[in-house]
Length: 431
View 1 (tube, rainbow, N blue to C red):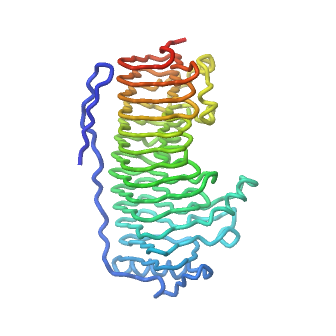
View 2: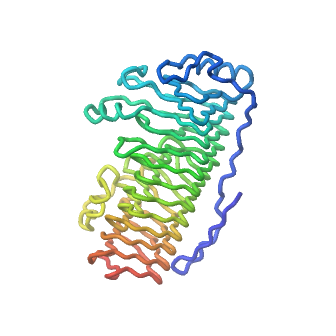
View 3: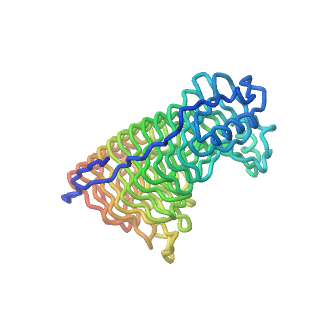
């Protein structure tokens, strides 16, 4: 499948074909292995760790099949998924982590709840829920940052993975990590729903090649989707998703393996701290390029668009928006290494956003400017500025940028071309 993006920016035709993923689906036998046949009891009291793992092992030994979690609440400790398995959590069923205090490993060596490494043909499905009983973990973490909180799902190097029609909620740490060198991943109709504030409850930590995230609803206490920290991303399409509270669809930090050919299309954001965010620092960067964001709406997002290479310095949206040209100029160039953040060849088109703090920020490093960023038919309303520091080839075409209370484009070491664009109430200027 290919998706064509045709854009005109600052008089330059940017028509091109962007590969959109068409992942291969898993092949899994239809044989059902019900966990209750292996002694599991869904009473919300019994520890079913051994029973559920024995069911998975039996299905794998038979060549694969459906590991069925029927209606009820099935408590468990850490389990390991294997190839050719569909973990199916049925309607009115909940697969739930053992609570804080009884979860194996305590708060110093707790392991991932559901994990795998190097598997193929894997499915996680059903209309039920996977729940982490995270509230007690969060409360402990707020008083003791040394607490080791287990991830709810960590799936390493999974190939032909399909996650769909299920809810993840209340993890002690991150909800679901797709890590290392996975590929052919489809995530569809996933609901990730955890209250805020809940510390570091990322919705999806994602790496992989030839993948789709579609028709999902993600509202969390940290990044809605965080991309690129543990492996490469190539050919990823994120489409028709709704993002509630969270820190946005983020790239980084730690994109050393690279992010390329990313398309985020037909998505909405409501009430988060950021919408589209790209974050890195001098020792946690890499190459991110060929990134396309289009047909997106954002409502009551603190800062709709953020690209910055000073993640550890910048802080939240309010602090970032107050960084002045003089402050940006005070950062000196450092040697370019393989961890220097590189942001280039990025397009934003057909975006309507209301910001509650500021319009946006582009803040590159003096040794590696953010380059070739195109805004086409982008409409942003916000009470604060749009800062552009250490950047070149930034183009605004047919945009309407409404920055209230006398705010403006604020520039330092920036090459910006503005065509058929309204910046209200004051025109762009460079210090």
